[in-house]
Each structure stands twice: as C-alpha cells, then as structure tokens.
Image (cartoon, rainbow, N blue to C red; front, side, top):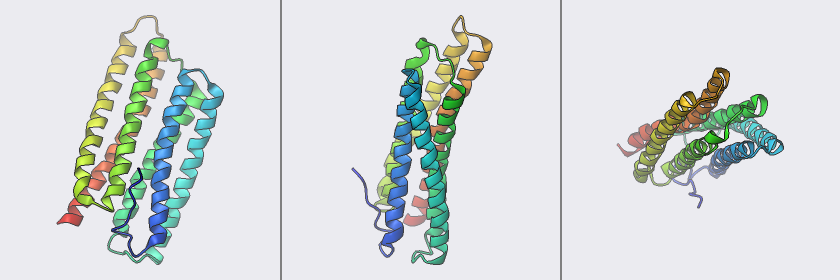
Length: 219
C-alpha cells in the first residue's frame, strides 16, 4: 500500500507527485535487482540483460529527476525550510538506484561462475538487501506524513542491514572454505557478494539521513 506524501508538500502538489514517482522508481529498481539475480542463477541470460537495461533506464530517469527537482525546489518551491532536507533524501535514494545499476551491469558483463552450492546464498542475500530497500522507502514516505512513526521502520532497516552483512560474511567464508574452486573464482564471487551487500548499505545511509531529519522536525 502506497503511503502518500502530504505534510511537507501540502502547498506544492507538483513536487509531491514527482517525489512519489521517484520513490516508486527506487522500489521498482529493487524488484528488478532481485529478478535479475534470480534470472542469472537460472541461467536465463537474456532475461538478465533485460533487467540490467531496466536498471540503467531507472538510473537515468532518477538522475534526470534529481536535477529537475533541485532546480524546481530552489526556484519555485513554496517549502524553502524543507528543500535542503528533501534534496538530501533524494540524493541518498538515488545512490540506491546507482548501486543496483552497477551490480546488474557487472552481472551482465562479467557473468561470474556461481557453483550450485552458492545459489541459495546469493538469492537470500539479494532478497535481504531488497527488503531493506523496501523498508527504507516506506520510512521515507512516512517521514512526510507521520514522522513520529519513522523510527519504528528505521529499526527494521537497521536490523535487515545487519542481517545482510552477516549473510555476506557467511557467504564469503563459505566460498573460501569450499574445495575445488579456483582462487580467481573465489575473488570474483567475493566481489559480487560485496556489491550485492552494498545495496543494503545504501539503504542504511538513507535511513541515517531520515533519522536526523526526524529529530529536526520533532524538536
């Protein structure tokens, strides 16, 4: 269920609508990420390439939106007391899309050899990171409507990010302790594990921003 932005943007429905669209884009990028990794694990490379292209398109649209929002907020907006905070949130959310695009592009270009014993681990790690993105976007929407409830959702984001870190570490240990894997492949698998885990780190960065702005608005 979409939570509608209202409080900060009551006097500016245009930027309200655009921000809602932007947050939708972040969520869609996360879904594309999960489906892309699933497709790669299933050796459906044509589907992977399609998802990687979708991620690229989302990144381009997000960058364009962020530039337009910056111009609009500083030239026409009716919410000057909040525009700096809004832009910072958009920039951190854009970083999530950027990381997803980089990770998807790496899969499409490098095509790492992932032994079957690691398939479930990669899927679980990706799903956990995507879940952290979904939760932080929910918290971002709530920031504009009910900031007193944001901390509850942020605690979920932080818990998911910690779980993702633990899963990533466990996967790396498993990679380096498994027999019959060339060192070059171990390094490659570690690289992709790190880049998937960075998605949750970017979600945590946005959560940190939100936590600060919630305090600013409530006190």
